[in-house]
Amino acid sequence: MTTLQLNTSLFGPGGQSTTLANEFVDRRRGKVIVRDLARDPVPHLDAARFGAFLAKPEDRTPEQQAVVDYSDALIAELREADTIVIGLPMYNFSVPSTLRAYFDHVARAGVTFKYTEKGPVGQLTGKKAYVFVTRGGVYGAQHIHTTYVRDFLAFLGITDVEFIYAEGLAISPASKDAALAKAREVIERLTLNKPQFALT
Image (cartoon, rainbow, N blue to C red):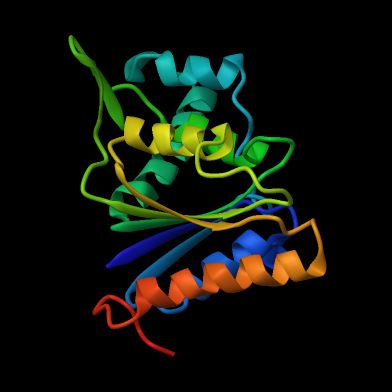
């Protein structure tokens, strides 16, 4: 079993989303791949990088091939993983820009999805995702912050997605403590007596 953990908090290991994701992953058995998008950000998509994705393999320049190789390495991690764990803070009503840049590099037509007469079909099926959502306010499950991530993962074929919320972290110390405690209760429930998890 392989877990791919994507950390996106600007605060690195001190971020609440990263802390919760770490606590969850620490209880799992098997190989863990950690990609910290704040420490090692994926370049934002621009015309040159997008052009590299569109170029035919035989026509790519060395610079374009390097861009594609980098994207291929990110996709290889996704393909290897049975489980994806994402730490997802909210910044200005949206996902961290580093996560969006990552998404732009793993959504490749003919590689991670394909176009059909009935619409796009994701190629990364058979995986489970857990998303640890942290927010200063209280916005609920239907906010675009999380619906975007749900829709994007489904676009790649990852439809078994569970969101774990810690909201109201900026309202008061009591609200923060209660929200984190609730998220940890969910972690306990998810990992209790599961053979793929190691109890601590």
